[in-house]
Length: 179
Image (cartoon, rainbow, N blue to C red):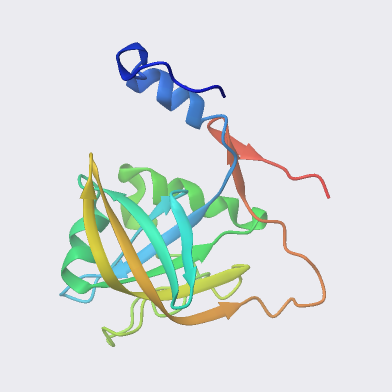
């Protein structure tokens, strides 16, 4: 990219243009989970999740303020990032469609989903990696809140002898990685 002559000549991307550009960005797929004040589990599919720092270990999740998980993270100050493997594609529909919300934690895949311990967040033992976080910073930007969480614990799949293919999203659908 060359230098910009002046700020008056910059084209502001329209939401559809920006959305189209982001569909071309391959992203790992995660399910971010939390627990509300009544102990009920909550979760959503997310691809806007990134590591922030190794010291202190931290993760950032961007959650739309209209998402039901937003109020849960704001109130509880905790979240769990479950990095999905491609073999876990059956979890996408319940966690990305509001009409299937009641099915989200019904499968045997989950641990601690229905725990009475408010410190135990729902997590997937078969996920390639699971990262439990406590919110250190929450800041609004546009339609979202950026939650930066200090890593409390990490669980990596015990399948240490083989690589687990991550679930990747590209152009609005699952994509396979070439190895």
